[in-house]
Length: 393
Image (cartoon, rainbow, N blue to C red):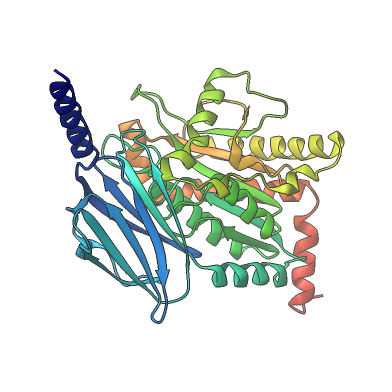
């Protein structure tokens, strides 16, 4: 009888070890390129154990994944990119998959495993961070303080691994927001005394709190975060404008739900823990009077945004709403979040896809921004300074 128990126990142990060693498939590979890093995303059929390390002369990053099989094609990736020369795969030991990434410079690898969420499978994310590029960007930001120019931070929502909302005919929110953001930035840069800073210049993801840090690093005088809304009801349409809620949670249920959806972008795209650290600048903001003044300025800006946008298309809410959006966390900068329209509405989706309509939306946002600074008494002064620089005065 005892032998039967021992034999049964050995079978259980063997079955358990076999289950644990079940091969996980790497079903897809995606590469996203940002100015300060490149991100490789592996779609997995299950959770894995992995190890990453660097090799030098030449520079390489090695990713070993236990009990994994590569089903995706490395050749589909657009290589080389600014960081990665090429990617090779091999099997150094039984049951182990190795990816060797040849890089052009010394990088700092960062990895994390994402559990399934929002219809996405397990994902292994490898970020190749560029410390030297980050250092040079910080120096450039410090040296390029445009004390005579009004700086507007233009933030295109979502990007990269996070597509945002997707319309019934496949239009992605991240595509619309970037297109409108670039058109808006061009209009701003043509205005004497104004300068635009694009928070996201391409199809890559920027963590929400990093967007705030980038706006601060650019010494922005205004921040416009651009989005497109989505709901199940296909008939809903119209733009809306939001500012930061001053106290605690948002009372308005619709605004609270939207804030929760937009604030979840980091989880969808994958953000390492170090990206979650609060910016210490917030803790140094002094006094309720200062905070209230900044929020009042955001309210004035939001009203002007709505006034201009209603000339371009339908408006969902007649007045600005307030919610706890992470991306509006720079309390010292007048900031608004603009939902251009409902991408879930097939008719409005076609509008949002149109470059001509995108240009009209960008023009409305620009006119509102210019009217805001004129009311604040800043744009006239900036224009005079521009004339001085140009030798007019």
